[in-house]
Image 1: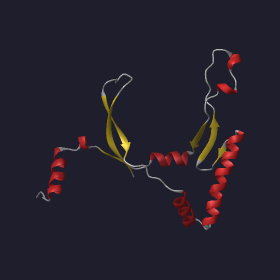
Image 2: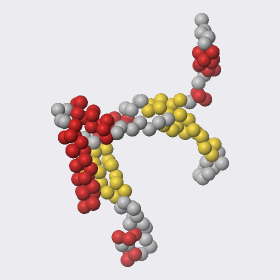
Image 3: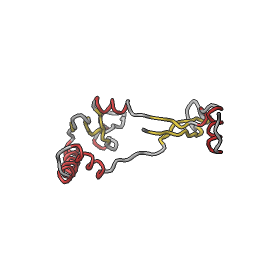
Image 4: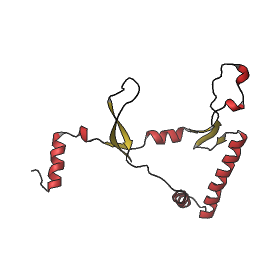
Length: 149
């Protein structure tokens, strides 16, 4: 489950300039290490740890090589990777050159199973402002060690 907390900030631009706005921010970003991922794959398959590690390292090298060549990479049910060069808008056609391309970006496009997983992720927002007075009273009693009949 992804847990969020409420933060606030004062807007400096836009139609809400000068107004305090509130938004949800993830409390902590859960991170799965390469070793943990490797262990999970080993547990789910008949592959050895060395095989899994070698495959993941080689995948990284092949992805870099393919992106350098400008090729997109199909990663099966995960999705695909491709390189994108945002262009600068020029006034004259003759001004458009390779130098007018901005810093390249790597675009990941997830497949349907990945998008479905994202949509079904469990989330909760810890928002003290939405708690009712009864809940606040119950929480206060719990903290003080009292119980309501």
